[in-house]
Image (cartoon, rainbow over all chains, first blue to last red; front, side):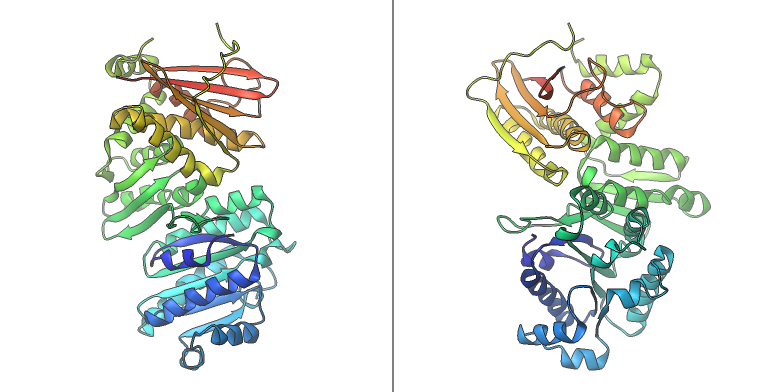
Amino acid sequence: MADPTTVDRLLPGDHVCWTFDDHERHLRALVRFLRKGLEHHQKVLYFTDTFLPPAFLAAAQAYGAEVRQPLHAGQLHVTTAEESFLSGGSFEPERALNGWTAAIDQARTEGYAGLRVAADMGWTVRPLVDMDELTWYEAQANQIFSAGYAMALCCYDRRLFTHAELERISAAHPGAARAGAGSDEEWDPLLRIRRTPDGLSLDGAADRTNHDALAAVLGPLAAEATSGAPVVIDVAGLAFADVAAARLLAGVVAAGRGRVLLRGPRPALTELLALVDSLHAPRASRDRIQAAEGTPA
Amino acid sequence: MFDQPLSPPPAGARRRAFTAVGELADVRSFAATEARAAGLGDRKVERVVLAVNEVATNAFEHTTHGCIVTIWTLPRTFVCQVDDNGRFGVPPVRRISPSSGRGHGLTLVDEVADLVRRHSHTGGTTTRLHFDRP
């Protein structure tokens, strides 16, 4: 499982798939996470599917986190995942997403510096939760968290999901802390997606492991740009993009009809975007690029 | 000329096995380190990383046991080989439709590498990427 220290690396705006297979280390990670939030005057919400809330709070107190005053003040809320995600009797992704927006608004109104959410996702294995709906929900959630006020730690028990399911779920998050993450070297989310005053910024790497998160955030940008001000995607910090990520970027730029702009692409991305473009173009232009690159026939 | 057996990698080749798509960052790091050590320039290193990442991604998506990446250098060539345990359905080159996202990835590999050779055999598919080195 991911090392408990990995949770220290989350920043406001991050949305991370965090896997565990050991309740002791899961508990240690959660306590670190909530403690840091309390110290930074953030509101902290934990939706548990692992512990009974009173048992978790007692354990957190025993681990040295002072939880009584924050609970009393409303800075800390611990409730069961079932009571929140399944409160309507079934999982309704749209309602859950609206719930995050409301929680963010409330934390802001209450004057907190940010919102820190940890959610155990074991409840999703129940028959009333559909895997397609879950991955759609996780991908869409990036639109909310990338605003930069809230951070979310989605805790997935590896024992409850198949590898294929976890890979799909992970891909809906910009970053995932998998087995072994943070034990040998420092871990950071692979990609950081943030809303900026004029659009969006991407920092890190975009590959198969976070493709669906990127797609969900880039998807609406073209419509946003054509109905409002132009949108700038700052890719200066995008150190690596695979072909599928480059195609997403090229797609949103094309759909924006001149109103979606890429700022600061590195030379490798510029070259890749030209290649992606040429593969859609007639054969003649591909030959020209090959000739220009000097590659052997 | 297509899909011929390839000569085995030399004894001194560096080899690493990767089992899950979550290790793609490690695949990239391995390829980049070796490419730099072979004296390739920054832009060439980036092409190596892009190409290896695409072939490895395809292996993770379409086969069950991940892939083995083997890297060696020849006097004029940097070679990076990806072995998976799956097979391309129709020889010699593609297992999936070029109209899908990943198909584009593999098409693009042919553009960024200086030479690509693929061989499907009973144990899976070997993709050997060649890059000119100074």
